[in-house]
Each structure stands twice: as structure tokens, then as C-alpha cells.
Length: 393
Ligand SMILES: *Cc1c(COP(=O)(O)O)cnc(C)c1O
Image (cartoon, rainbow, N blue to C red):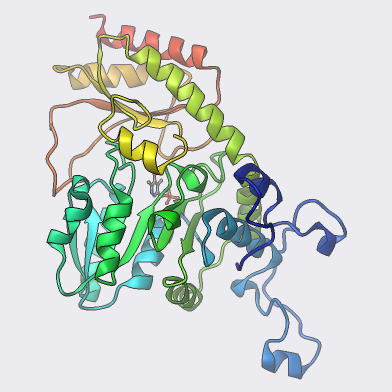
């Protein structure tokens, strides 16, 4: 919740291993306890009246939730962190914490689809005007600013199409008019991109993905700058958000291995992509870690690594039947939503309804792949037989 258990001088992997743990406070046990709690007892009325003890009510926090919040606050370099029931819930809470009736919010056109759904269906009910911007605008996003622009919502790289954005330039423009900057940083995780260092106020994670890392928990996190923290803390309390301790514990457990998992996800992904490039059925590959990617320079400047999620376009003229045959022929890759777990996944990319400030080729067939921790040579064999099956006839 608050800073700071490990001196900032330690490097990222050391912090990941030691942050959010206080073994001496729990009889020397390495991990914090999973505290199932509603009522917390007070020794007397005086303590009750002053709230003079670390925990007062289950909903307001336990040693378990505090451990994960503390860890993320330290990793993100934030003023504080709040947990949410899902990544989408974190996005909604972060937006509501910095917007009020009469405000205008700018949202990246390449944002995660359900972010748009929230913005389009909920925010207008509270008289908040939503406008989408082309992520390529960088600092020129300021040309869209209005007198009532209160927040800019970024996501890099963008969902499904992986466009990078110049986050520092956007953040600088937004801050010059006092607007709050939000970033959905799920793709890179707080290990490979530090939004707050780039000028972001509210750094959002779908913890469901790489932090949990095992496809078994829904969780969101929001880490805030000094400026954004008081409003986030107040809204989170007022809304009564509480995450079950077993889920919080699993997220903290996942966090410990984030660095080694991400390193392998990236290595496997580069190996699979190297092979995909040799296939004539595959056109463009969208992954900012590739030198050929239009976002590569921004990625190199602002990120320290890449995760296991990318997309590729099938060659021009690919039919829906062929693209569906590819997905249906995969055996190691599962067909399913979400990503960030240990296993490989594939989905057909559907952009319809998810872009309004930029254009896209409606006939293009694309695949989004998550490269898991399997042996990449086995994944390549699976992709090869699926491409062969889909394009043989
Ligand atoms: C999955 C995802 C989310 C939402 O996370 P949930 O936990 O599924 O609600 C938000 N942003 C991005 C970029 C995602 O990929």
C-alpha cells in the first residue's frame, strides 16, 4: 500500500524476490498469510475511535492485500496501488477516479475493446464526453484538447494491432493542461515498462495476464502517482472493492517468477516469429521488438523487454475458410481469450467496431498468438501443420 520495504538501490529481480514480504512479522514464514477476514477486533473503544491499529475491517485491507499492493507500488515506483476485481474493473475505476461530469476524455483508438465498451456505455451517462485519438499523433494529441479535457487514456502497444505510442510526448502534452494520463500497460507488465517514469499518473495492469501468469485468477491493479493517488484511494474505498485473499495470494506468488517467465516468453516468441517470417502464407508481423516494426524505435527507447503476445496478417486474399481452418487445425495452441499464462493461445483478430479514429483493412485476416512456455520447436511444428492444412487446398 505504501512505500517501501526494499531499498530502491536493488535491481528489478532482487526487488521482485523480496518486496511485499515481512517474514519476521509472521513467525519467519517466507510468504505472507492468506487472511480470510471481515471483522477485525479492537482491544478497546479508544483504539476503535482513533482507528489506531493497522487493520480495521476486511474490506479495507488485510496483510495479504497489503503485501501485493506494497510489492506493486515498489515495482511501479508509485505513490500507492489499489487492486481491482479484473483488468477491466481496474480500467473503469481508474477512469472514474479522475473524471467528473462535464469532462472530456481522449482514448487511444487502439485500446482494448472492452475499454471502449466501458467508455461508450458508462461515461456518457455521467455527462463525460469520450473521443478517440489516432495513437500515431504522439504530442500532437494536443490538437484535440478542449477546455474540459481532463484525461488521456493510452495503451501501448495497442490491443490486437500492436501500434506503439509516444507515451512521454502524450504525457507531457496532457500534463501541460493539467490532465491525468492513464496507461494500460498489460502487454509489457511493470517489469518491461514503467509508466510512471514516462509521465503517466495511473498505471493499469490486467493482473489476470502476466502477474498471475497461470490462467487461473481474474485481477486488476492500478498504481498511482502522488497527484492521482488520493482520488483513486478515495473512490476505491467508496466503491467497496475487495479482492478475495486466495486470489491475491496467487497473484503475489505469480509475481515472484514474472521475470524468468517473461524472459522465456520473449525468447520463444522471437524464435517462433523468425520461423513465421519464412512462410509465404504470412504477411506482416506486428511485434514492436522486431526491427522491421514501425513502433520499434519507441519500444527500444521506452521498454526494456517484450512479452509473448503478437499478431500476424495472413497473405492478401486469404479467405475466412482458410483462416478458420488454420485455427481449427492447431493442437498445442488453445483457442481462447486472455493470455499471459504459461500456455500458448491463438485467436482470430476481429477489429470490427473497435476502431473509429483510424482506418483498417476490413478484408485482412489476422491471427493473434500468445507464445507460452512450451518448447518453441514444438510450437513451430504445430503452426506448420496448421498452415499446411489451411492452405493446401
Ligand atoms: C485482458 C486485458 C484487459 C482486461 O483484463 P481482464 O482481467 O480480462 O478484465 C485489459 N487490457 C488489456 C490490454 C488486456 O489484454
